[in-house]
Length: 263
Ligand SMILES: NC(=O)c1ccc[n+]([C@@H]2O[C@H](COP(=O)([O-])OP(=O)(O)OC[C@H]3O[C@@H](n4cnc5c(N)ncnc54)[C@H](OP(=O)(O)O)[C@@H]3O)[C@@H](O)[C@H]2O)c1
Image 1: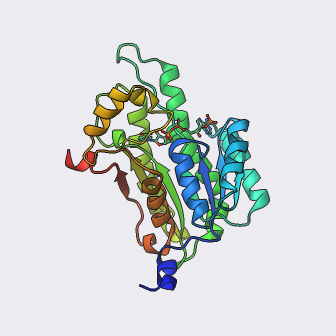
Image 2: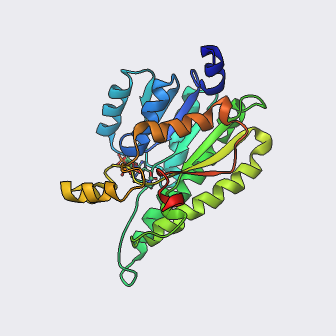
């Protein structure tokens, strides 16, 4: 395979992307991969310091701009979209990655644990996509489709040992919302796909890794004996965003080393 054919298939250089929750964990992995592949990447998260640090870190590889934002409500989504609209005519890639979980015994699960998770994990992705549709529509064409990648979880596909009720509901909901949007945005040349991570090391999963013994046991229980890496999450988003992925829409791909499919 010549390099130019490889570029034709998987190249995303020059594309414009937004990654929510791009300042740490899986979002940072995706943002780093997109920047290193030559995309211009906007990352968004609430903490101003984390935004500055991420912009500085990823700018070593290419173009990264951080915009402090809260994408758990319509006002925050609109404000972020307006800032992007001021800077860009088109948007090729939207990654709705920011998410939050909450674990509590079923008898104690309360409204705040429900609302905070559902607001960020399923309401935000819908309204941010809605607000950015004009830019996504402008970017999408029959041979260069724009893409929305919604990050859910294998916990939204089947239950785990966790008692994360609002999280599984929100992630399963985001999965089905993605199929509906894939259908409705077909003629706008916008693909909508889902990346469903399995185990990745991040702040969200830090309690699972907080001792060496716990980490060892957890990794030993994974089919591939490891957790997810930057290349795993970023590689899938790059595939969805490239020519190679343009005939794929409305699908969920578990990114979990076979945990949800083979064990
Ligand atoms: N780690 C895993 O094993 C795993 C497994 C399955 C699914 N996932 C999913 O993958 C995604 C990323 O998870 P992670 O483990 O990387 O989580 P994480 O380490 O907790 O990172 C979450 C990111 O989202 C940002 N964020 C949180 N609330 C926000 C808000 N209201 N508005 C904007 N940004 C916000 C955080 O930055 P600020 O605090 O600065 O806002 C941070 O950048 C989530 O959707 C999660 O459900 C993760």
